[in-house]
Length: 65
Image (cartoon, one colour):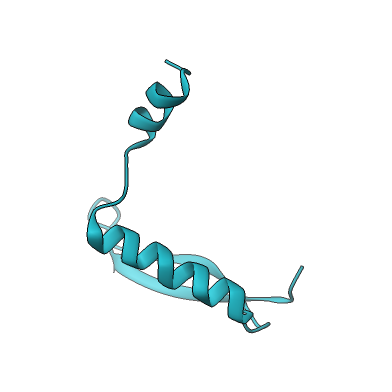
């Protein structure tokens, strides 16, 4: 498991509290390997081409619903 660094991102102003909201986000300091980058690119291509399904569709296909 890689070393993680926590960063705080300021998001939109909270409408209910009139205060700024922030979220802690983990940032991995270890670079991705070539295989992982390749898999990410393939996934982005699948999304762009519409080769995706919803969780409900997947459950139905696998017989979980």
